[in-house]
Image (cartoon, rainbow, N blue to C red; front, side, top):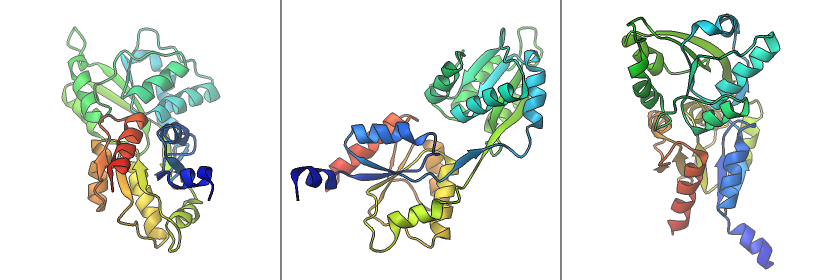
Length: 269
């Protein structure tokens, strides 16, 4: 075996489960740190069952005080729908909140800058940061527009409503399991195949989809495959599914996730 092929064989192999259009950033970071990423998307971003909520919100955008985005997907779907339906994204005088750095970058890509980004990229932290703004200076309810996935969590809108705010939820997209997922996973985990050293999961929906595909393919996750979670919400979902993560990123970012995975694998005998 040549030095080059031997070096390649020694690289830890890490499964990346993000949607096809999002996998590259995590894969690139893993590759930079010395891993061999394996891209197997377990979710696909598609239009919601109905755009009615979003279209209604876009038609009366200027009545809102705040725009809230809980994912980069929501930003991209919001902007794409506005362009497709002919709505102008006039956000002058409207404050914008992004749940984390990836969402803030998605806003920057359409020339929008968030006024608020919570310290931790979870709904609980975002709700806490927005609570002081639940009412206007004159005591009237603040009108929030939350643009999110069809299957989004209720913590953020419920918390803000409980503080006296008016929250409109507009569905911009939904996720579904890619049809080719079972075949791709069998390549990784079928008996006789060399399983990945690590598995990265970046959301609750990705976690549910991954283990649903594993079950549908009648596969078993090898005990030696390290499960890495991007944050506490994803970790909680994994525990509910019966697969507690071995490690969790210190921050909810692909950079932190890649770092903790590689540190763990390199320290393991």
